[in-house]
Amino acid sequence: MASELRPISDRLRRKKTYRRVLGGIFYGLFLASVCVGIIGLVVLLYEVLSNGLPWMNWQFITDYPSRHPEEAGLFSALMGTVWLMGMTALFTVPVGVGAAIYLEEYAPRNILTRVIEINVANLAGVPSIVYGLLGLALFVTWFQLGRSILAGSMTLSLLVLPIVILSSREAIRAVPDSYRQAAYAMGADQWQVIKQVILPSAAPGILTGTILAMSRAIGEAAPVIAISALVYITFVPAHPMDRFTVLPIQIYNWIARPQDEFRGLAAAGIIVLLVILLTMNAIAVFLRNRYQVRSEE
Image (cartoon, rainbow, N blue to C red; front, side, top):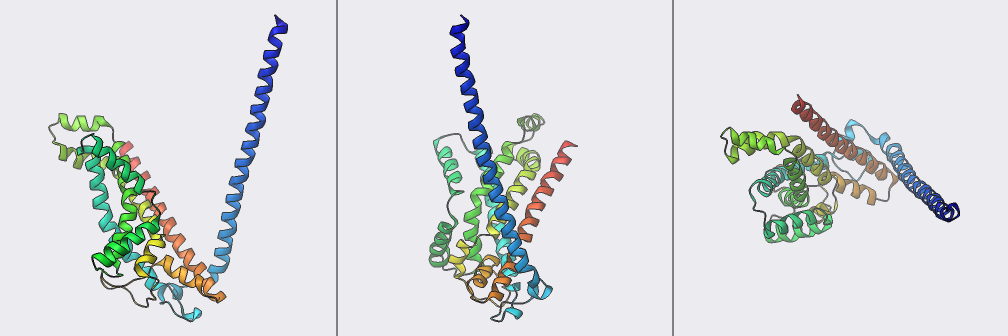
């Protein structure tokens, strides 16, 4: 009997050893991949900081672009970015949150709703250049908005709208159903439940998703290149129909210049863009944690 069980135990031992060795190999590969990514990020940050910090000063922030590196700044690109993000949020937030409320609270559970949900999820993964070409054909040419802030903001709204819808739906879905039932039991109608119960409870997730969507939009260059066509702007836009430039385009313009000084300016512009993105992400985390603490209290 023992002789019959010995081959089985040997086979199990070999299989266990094989799995342990295979697991160690994959662990080593994954660890090496993570280390390569971290090392690449550290090297990239070192290059950007070492080249850009010498150019970082108040004059760089407040001056306009120039053909002379020592006189160049990014004020017009910075203000264009502020204009573009403000207009994009103005278009995106009401539509995105409203669509999420409809899909979660009002839409009937049928095939049409399912098709809409699948398409919204698919649109979140469409390459940004596709939205740029769509904005060029739709807003610039068909609606004749020109290469303006309005056309650019509407194009970026198409880009980030699926993200806002998905994040808002997840936030609304996370609200416990007992909150709804308690509000209905007190005599509230559906809109009162949404306005006074669901939206306040889902606000942290909605705010976080919206800010993260805006942080993606602020770093996108491809759609804005199609709209603003790398224009050389030395003024601050005064209204939504003005032409504009943004930080990614200004950085691209400097990188394309042959002089080494402009590459330093591009590195300084990247630092400014990184600071803005990190600040937006920090605000999103702060708001989420603050609302969560309040809800737990």
